Length: 346
Image (cartoon, rainbow, N blue to C red; front, side, top):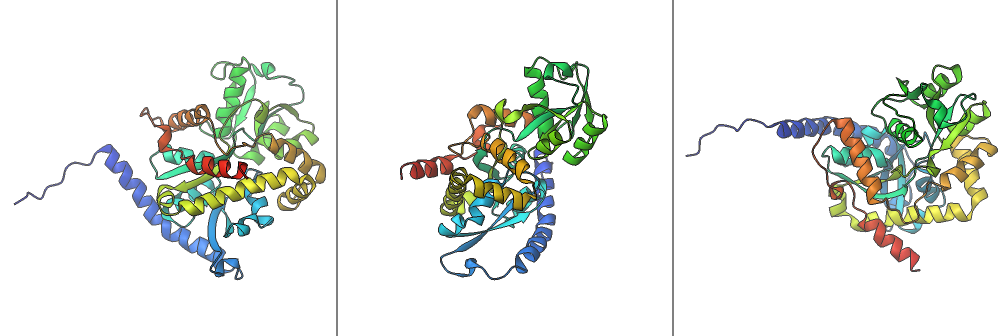
């Protein structure tokens, strides 16, 4: 007869149990919240047998989700048999909802990668922004990145993605971020813009189109990061379970995003109008934002191994973990690769 004692829990066991408990506790809440969003919507094409509804988590703050938005607005997803419902939700909550099954996809590439590095069962399946949609902005008296020596750099936090990008960029320009910069944690984009305008900081990173609006206020763009760095910025995340269960649907969604990007490139004025209406921007700002955004788009929906590895290393710095993480644990680009080849062959 077997003895009924338990082995002591390891640190890994405790971490898994904590994550599992968090997901279980939040799953009901996400189901209620997302159910309320979906329940109040009118009947759509998802009610027909040929169209299926999918829920995609995104954020309306910046232009990162634009390829998904344009594919939805131009009904390209519907032509592929998908009724895409966009759910505005914070990135970290979106990944939790992805794991619980309340969302099928998320448009948060960096957050998905970080979650996969931490051991959550999610993966990046497409990267359509393989360059950052940010600019390093400064006070007007600072004319180059080299002049940032001894100056104050405003960041969201020490572990935020934009802070890694700005420090990496300045280091490549010859400014040691550890010794020659004063880092000041400010918070979100509006707060960083306010700090820059008031002189509380000398420079900060702002996303498109906020950087363009900052220029109109007299602040200086030192560099558009999309022309200087390679970095995973925008893309699609999905759960490991969904990869196993719905590879056919995954390929349809990726095809829709590719088609949305092609449509946007071919119809500039229509796309600028969509940026104006959805993001509430003036035409001149929308035009500049659209042109900058195009510079960050990946042609094939993939990110280089170097960019993925750099993302993993930055994520490990945040978690203070030294355990190696293989690329295969965080990305599965097989779907994007297959769809790109099929579309290119047509």
